[in-house]
Amino acid sequence: MNIIGKYLILSILSLLFVQNVQAQSYTIKGKVTNDKQEVLVGASVVFTELNLGTTTDADGNFVISKVPKGQYEISASYIGANTQTNVIDVNGELTINFQLEITAQNLQEVIVKDKTQKTTGITRLRAVEGVGIYASKKTEVVVLGDITAN
Image (tube, rainbow, N blue to C red):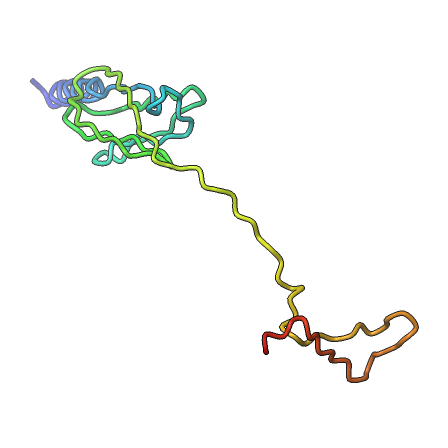
């Protein structure tokens, strides 16, 4: 066999090997819901060891392609919910559904009051008040009702 024949056989074998390696990647899909069976839009689903992941669509569905054969941890997380992690064996197309427990709580309303009206006993007159002009004069006024003294 001449050298060209050897290269031809080697090329064919390498192409078969590349096709075999490419054929061993799979697609993982599923859905992420909360504990009330409501879909979670924008939840993260990640294979941490593979650095592969995605987020859920408007229906709570996700699809991760090109996952190689093997055993991996897959995690689903969402803001305001507990993260769920599963160990799966990838040896074909899989459908995995996650149900995350919501931990966020509704808070009571907060009322913010403006304290600029409180004078602590001393304030200033306006520059012009009625017919009086107080600009460039001493304008401090003691407000007796605001003083915290006996």
